[in-house]
Amino acid sequence: MDEFFRLLAEGLQKGNVLLVIIVLVVLFVLNAHKLYPLFVERKKSRLKSLEAALQSEWVQGAERECLKKQAETEHFHAATGIMLEKAPREALLRIYERSGGRLPFVYFRRAAFYVRYENGELEVRLSRLERLMMWGGLGGGLPVFAISLTLLLWTLCALVLWGSEPFGPWRFWLISSVIGWTGALSSRSAYSANRVRREIQRQASETDTPGDVTNPPATP
Image 1 (cartoon, helix red, strand yellow):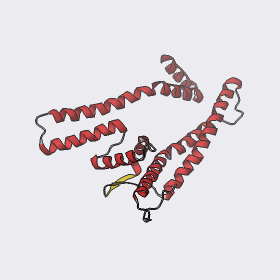
Image 2: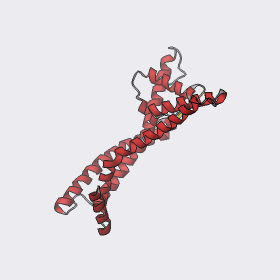
Image 3: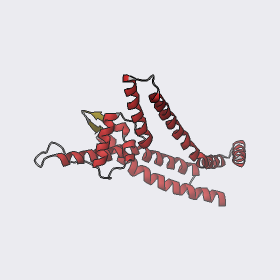
Image 4: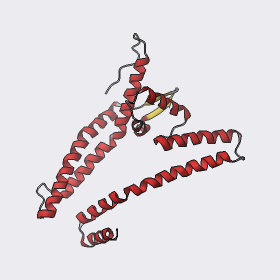
């Protein structure tokens, strides 16, 4: 680790931006796994506090019922990453069970921003414009990222081996790959929400009678 910090200090002193970026990326990759236990420990701490409060003889009546509901919510959040109260949580579980494994839980977690609970049912609010931007982000962002990243790696290899940049400045391809990845990543939540929306529509159409046309078929 000391060697990495020495290289980082050397790159900063000499103004070697490429060396600084490489060292920072390597440090992040090597230490990213250490962040996960911190999040897990934080969740465990909240759950332990709730469980300790429930075991106290001083917590009774409405306060105890409130803490029970909060503990259920926290346990569900720890298991799935989704923070929901009891009623919307049960509605979500109904949709998940009826999906028959077609819709993994990760889609519900990513779609949380677009999901609303009204009249005893979950509803996904995703406008046509948001869907259009989603397909644009996925259709444009992923190819841009893949091409830019490939050319960035080739350019860095050529720069290290021969001291030249045959495909253009490496900074341009770095920025392009970041833009492409950001575009694709920003569309992930909307894509998940669209999958959940289509599954809700599919389940609603299955419960309709053959002559009922009030519910339109799922749209892409």
